[in-house]
Length: 294
Image (tube, rainbow, N blue to C red):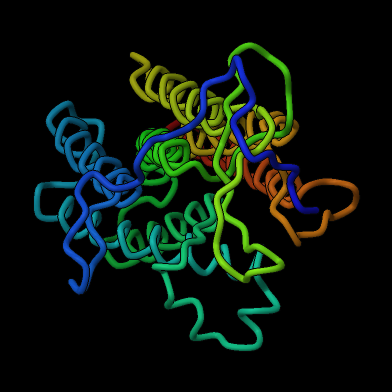
């Protein structure tokens, strides 16, 4: 469905005019410039690296400085590859099936948060096998760090003026710009969408900040929770918040629903089921450990 547009911004609402670039490079350079979206990923990884060091000093992580570096490299590869492949498989399958190499065209945009999570979990599992560290313990660690990356990423989505929400008349609605092609001249033009929910900021607050605070509180409990509990809770909570957020977010153009749910909602249901499985596994292994200790 093509969004409705106007030639001028709707009076009474803020018209989005943020630049997706922090710095623009001269024309002809290999890169267009430094984008806020790329900086969001860097900020998320920097936060993770900082907190891994804190966790180790506070005896909440088995990873020494060398292992922390290796773990961060594994996570960066897992998150970036998972986010890109997840987008192509979950939201652009036809294009991916026709040309799998299109997944390498990262400059065209398209990253999936669910795919990034899958990539992070797989990277953690592989790392845990090689380093002989408990997977569920490492899972709790990444679950307490990943929401920061989600927060930064959603803020960057807002700056980019992408993934906007559904039409609304709430006072804080935003008028986003929309690039289209004039059917008569074939030239690119800029129109303005009717006021919409700033769903990117809703997601930043819910999927990012809220879950970050929850997982940090749970991770730092005086009596540590069973390994895997924080990971499971994070998955369930993210799924619940994402399902709610989807009611305010405009579905991607050309992407069909699944069983009456948006793609984001459907994949979140699967994520919630995985979260429940992690919680069950955490409690089962905890009971088994207590029994062995007796």
